[in-house]
Image 1 (cartoon, rainbow, N blue to C red):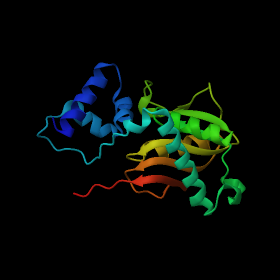
Image 2 (cartoon, rainbow, N blue to C red; image 1 turned 30 degrees about the vertical axis):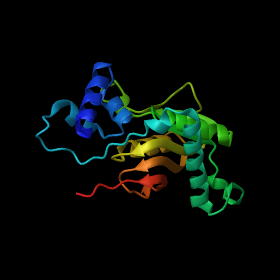
Image 3 (cartoon, rainbow, N blue to C red; image 1 turned 60 degrees about the horizontal axis):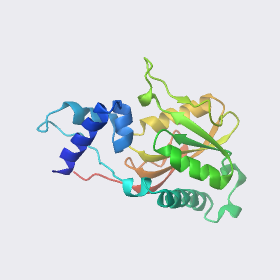
Length: 206
């Protein structure tokens, strides 16, 4: 079975288990457009330009996930100051970590524990059942008004969700100071002026 066949099968299995296309996109680290194609199009049709990422060898193993989260955090401070945290500027210190559901939540949790700051959870619009769909911050965790927020997720695919989160945080009185991701498929330096710090940049060469 080819990697494409495996992706199609995984997408169909997740759909049959009750996942929405937006949730499937998060599970497979793909764009919603790619997931829609996997679920509806014939294999002979035009394939969306996307890159599948499977990092379950790390995400399913707690200690490895913790080490990865700490790598993201150390890279953030080294990139913003060129020095260990003690030399970083105070405005770079987050007072809240915003994890994007679903894959950003465990990473954000580990980073929030390490920083001893609040943990906020953002549910993106693509996972919403409302019409029209809207994103929101969970009421069960930290709120973002007046906080310096670092946004955390596993991957930037199209950038749509990141733009959405940044706008939401600013609209609700927060100050987004950085975006931390493992993988960046877009190779972008910032989202609406908020710097992106990715461990890996992934490019598709056609």
